[in-house]
Amino acid sequence: MFNAGDLRLQEQNMPDVDILSINHVCLVVQNKEAADAFYSGVLGLKPHHKVKSWLVLNAASTLHLVAIPKADPKDASPHRTVQHFALQVADLQNLLRTLLAAGQQPFQMDNSMKEHALTDSGDPLTFGTGTVFIRDPDGNLIEFIEEGKGLFSIEMRPKL
Image 1 (tube, helix red, strand yellow):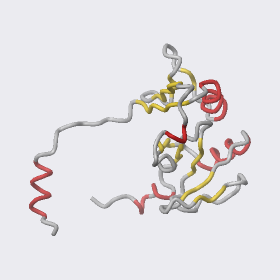
Image 2 (spheres, rainbow, N blue to C red):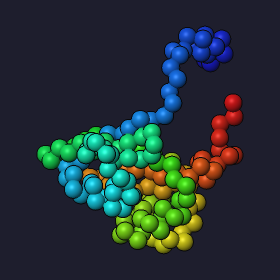
Image 3 (cartoon, helix red, strand yellow):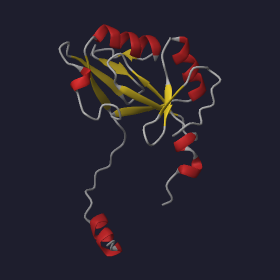
């Protein structure tokens, strides 16, 4: 049974950690060249000026690609189909055009993991969570969100 007093006690004992942002995400890839072609060639990420295995996402965050040629992406995790990271973009429709022009296979997903293929740059982005997903050459799942759209619209924000 829920007890509001227990929740207040837990909140009072919460650690005082002020997380500012995600610094980096690390992915294991089999083929670094294929991963670089996808992340730099398709998504336009720039290599870090000092560390070749990092790609710059923005002024504060990087993507760290660790090449392990013998790694089998299918054995990485039993939850690989849902394990992902999300990148916020300025315009989902523009992202869709870019992905399709690069020969990628973007899709949308609902909360039950049902996928809906996106095949035209004019497709409405209203299925499921209203976000766009893609898999990299190793099968890593990436979600793209646009603030104010789909699951990230004003009416979907939590009420505090």
